[in-house]
Image (cartoon, rainbow, N blue to C red):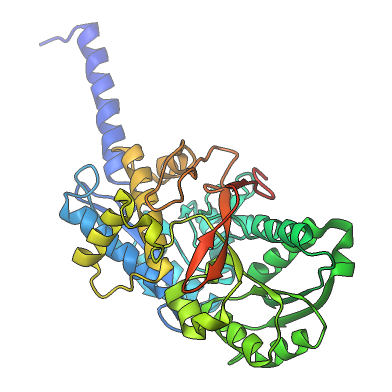
Length: 406
């Protein structure tokens, strides 16, 4: 039997569609029933407080799977412990990419750890999506097209603090405690940018620490002896609580600026003691789960119902659990947008095509927007002060992203 020219053309077109569908189904880490996602998280070590993020994300994907998955596919979330150690991150990431054949690496936590696999993942063309760090380097689509951050970047946050002290203090003298890596230096540089040509005059003392240090007490003593009236606390949760405690013990009474990645009440402030944190200033872009203002908000009620059913052992006073819920939903939205084309290229393209997406638990007025030249999903926040046993937001929603689109 002879086929007409039209029939041959139609058959060829169907074959192309079929091949395209097969390629989508057979993309790395993707089958007809599964999407495999890799993650490294510090479930042990000096940054173990962040482990609740990975646990929350795992519980979130359990909920997604219980409800049928995404476009009929279940999420296979493989989250492994790297102890906040870059060499372990490299080892675990290679296993996830080369042995487990994950579709994407997602929400790896930490600037030094993500830095250790930054070039590797881009060379392998594996999406390194929504990393759990605000370093400015995660927003460089020209140089690193396979890496994208999620939260506001650290330099921008530092600029906001600098502007605040310049507006509220007549003669600010700043002492800085910071982690001795790109994470800490990004925050410090943001402060320098915000202070401008007065930075060298206003910053009177700097002390760094290593993540392997058991304590930062001696550094805080040196900073207190500098005569500073502002303490810029650029630390991870364990050291943040130590620093807040030591400032109180020294009877030093500076204005305390606490970076946003360590302002969790459950993981930091309550451990140091509420009375020691009075008057601290920090920045927020998520609803504080301990703030009664949100008790009747439907997004908080949905989050609480999720926690009760899928993560009952999770701490509802820990802001890292609400963070995990929000960033998990951002990944779900990205995969929904990708549809049946779950190639790594299309997943990355959809991550760079989020328009006015409101991830649950973001502060009202804050939305996620990305583009081919904008790999900074969240670029807004609001200042807040710690009073009593909770944070109180003040002022307007602030915009701006140092290095955006670079």
